[in-house]
Image (spheres, rainbow, N blue to C red):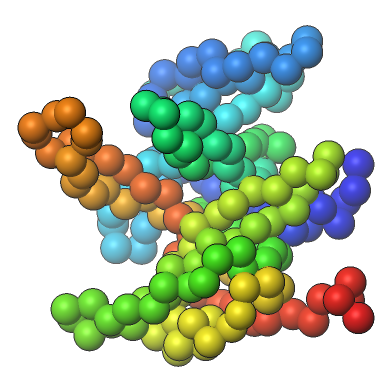
Amino acid sequence: MNHDMLNNNKVYLQGQVASTVKFNHSVIDEDFYSFNLDVPRLSGEVDRLPIVISSKLLAGKTLNVGDDFAMRGQFRSFNKVVDGRSKLILSVFCREVCEWDELANPNSISLTGFICKPSIYRVTPFNREISDILLAVNRNYDKSDYIPCIAWGRNAQFVSKLPVGTKLDLEGRIQSRKYNKHLEGEENITEMIAYEVSVSKLASVLDENAL
């Protein structure tokens, strides 16, 4: 295993289990399960985040709604075809179950990856500057995760001027965001949930492979 790839994508979360643990999928002889984790913000709001965990890490332990849970892992993506269209599915993959730490930041992520499409810069009606970034983060077995990120203020200005292919280091938190969408063939508006990284720090990095 390439440990440098592990350093490209590091997540720490702690919060309360918010849903029952359900079977998700199997890979060879290993079963994986999923559940939602409510992670608090300083504002008192919570981000409800999807977690995927191996049965080997659960080791027969039962997780109940309301239980405290702390973990380290990676923010991962895969493409799923829904109604003939490719949809990016995001979840946090648990690599280690941790002891609860009252002093820890309950939601932190650091990523190193490459801008893989032009950033979208805009100004909100409240005059906040935002740039939407899609970051390609390499991991083992020649795979990549495509992580939506949002930069604010001066970071938004900075990243909006960088070309596709620029290597970035960034830090922030994973957030969930509800939005409304008209689904094809349906009259009513359906509430959807998006997951993304809210960026607190970022910097461009010289890619040694480009030399």
